[in-house]
Each structure stands twice: as C-alpha cells, then as structure tokens.
Image (cartoon, rainbow, N blue to C red; front, top):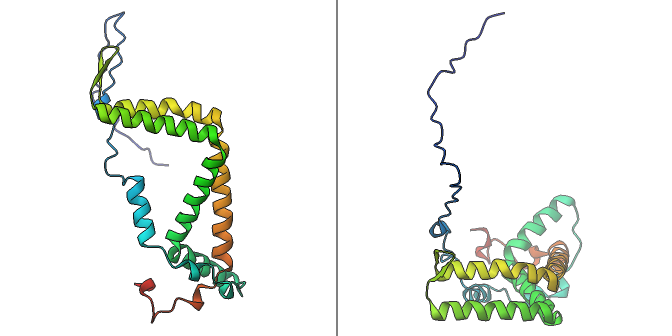
Length: 193
C-alpha cells in the first residue's frame, strides 16, 4: 500500500483577546437589512386582483371531474396551481381575514402593533436606548419582535395554522378535481408560453 503525504503546514492567526473585564459585544444595528424591496400589502392585493381568473370559471361545476390516471392527476394539479394562482392567494387572504375577525384578541394585538408602527413612522426620529442610536426601522423591528409573544398568547398560532390547513385543503381539492383541460388549450391561452 502506498503512503500518502498531506501538507498541513501554514500560519494561523490567533484572535486577539481583550483584557479581563472588557467583554464587549459589538452589534452593528445598521447591518440589519432593510425590507424596502418587498411590496406593501396593498400593492400585493392589487397585483393579485389584476391577475385573478374569472370566478365563474373558477367555480364552474361542470369542470369538476376525477382524473383518469396518476400522471394526469399530477399534471392537472401543477397546471391548476399555476393557472389559478391568484385565485388561490385570494382564497387564503379571505380565510385569513375571516380568522382574524373571529379572533378578536389577535386582531386587537395586530391593530396595536400596526398603530405603533404608524406612530414610529410618523415621528421618524432616532431614539437613544442604552447608549445605542436606534433608527425607526430598528424600532419597528423591535416592536414586531416584542409583539410575537403577545400574538402567541392571543392564539395567533392557532389562527395561522387553521388558515393554512383550511387553505391547503380547499386549494388542493380544487386543484385535484378541477379539469383544467376543459378551459385551457394551447390555441386559446398563453398559459404554455
């Protein structure tokens, strides 16, 4: 058997140690990324609304049929999810609004956080907290992080998971049983482009 030699020589730099008693934690609060590239909820709703398929087509009972084979079922589900994507997002939003209306404590916490974020944005002033300058974006982030335990206590986890479960069930049932071949063909739609 041949002997293998691996060169592991080199120089390592040891990190400098601070003198005893100087345990500083350097946190750069400016390095928190800004979420300015995300669309606002209103813009998101408008884009979903613009690309909605007609509800008469979405709920056409004549197009609900079971699939003949597993291959057709797989193709049907993926095509339905792509074709009716905005309708499915709209269903999720409606179910989320329904859940928030039926859970008043969660709605109250969300309203309080939204009001706090609005006040922070309207003042738009840096705050000095424990010797650190905190920007309005960081204040809003801290407010939202602080609201997370309140939301969990108010039952937002149950609301979120009920909405996700109900949405997934409704969307999956529609995607499985809706025969998209009855409305989408290569000639009459740019779906395949």
